[in-house]
Length: 291
Image 1 (tube, rainbow, N blue to C red):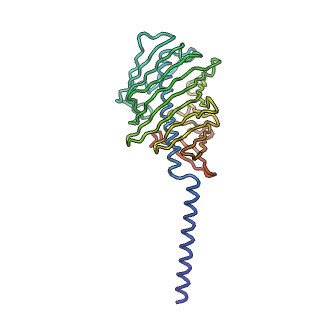
Image 2: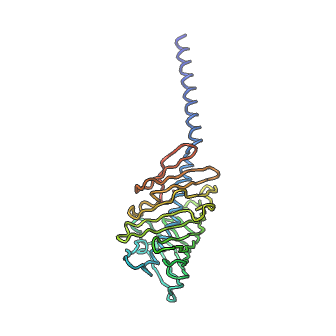
Image 3: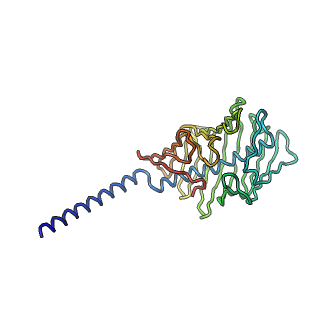
């Protein structure tokens, strides 16, 4: 009888210890990175990539209209799934290009698009310092994810290389389940063009104004967020579009009052980020559609 009580006592003690241990683990997770935290950061990075991609598409369309001398650009495969119309009244100073995606084909990254992108410009060719072009989305979707809004791109280059642009815009992204996110952007984008091959190009994204968030808005959970770029974000053309996020750089993301450091790595071509909050770090894979 004594032995049985002793065993039962040990079992009870072990169960209490186990419960306390699991509770401690849960407290550690609550204090650090939860599944919701990972979702918040993955969704923010994916939304950033989706909204920012329109810059590349617009630049490709403008470049086919008005290529920079010294290097022949390959036609962007995303435009192969669209009808690109140049306004007959276009001049060097002002103009308009309309891109209509039919949704009947996919690009090399297996993305299907519908809707329209309209690009208007003034003040000279897009690569001329002082020129301004505006990108407006109408009924535009990527893999069923709807993106609305517009952005203004101002050429602030002081030298021929690198081409430097200030970008300001406001967008809304809506997913098939009805959830949506808003995003206001204010950032500077540099295009480091290789004289040898487009595959050696780089894009560098940085703060335009240290006192103004590079991005802000509400996420799919309805929570407010802000983004500050603490180390410039770098995209490598050599990584290809299947890597849809930067591969170098650090940004500070604050969601609903909680701060996260997001590190994009050392240049390795992948869709992984290291997220740190409250002294706890976790590797998160960013889904390109933000699901």
